[in-house]
Length: 90
Image 1: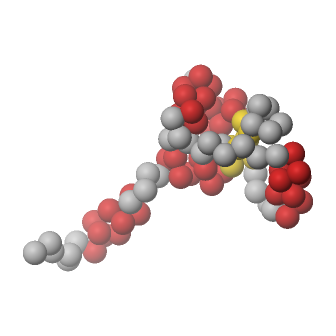
Image 2: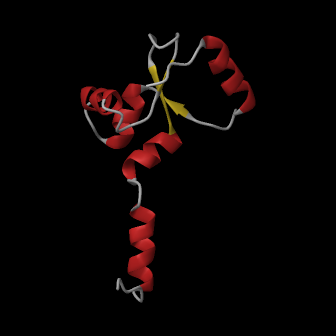
């Protein structure tokens, strides 16, 4: 997992002010999961997160990272394919 320096974090907050960041506890509440399970999902790279304090501080998880966790890669393609229903594999 990439750690982010305090300078990078400040730059990010300054230039992307509309991004909502959640703490690990808040993300756990949104996901209806135990915070330790969320921590394990972050450690195993299943859920993206940033860390404050040069990689030693608390986790910050964006709304987009939560959404990506909830909708696995390729899910939109499967959803679209089911709607169309005319695609055949030859």
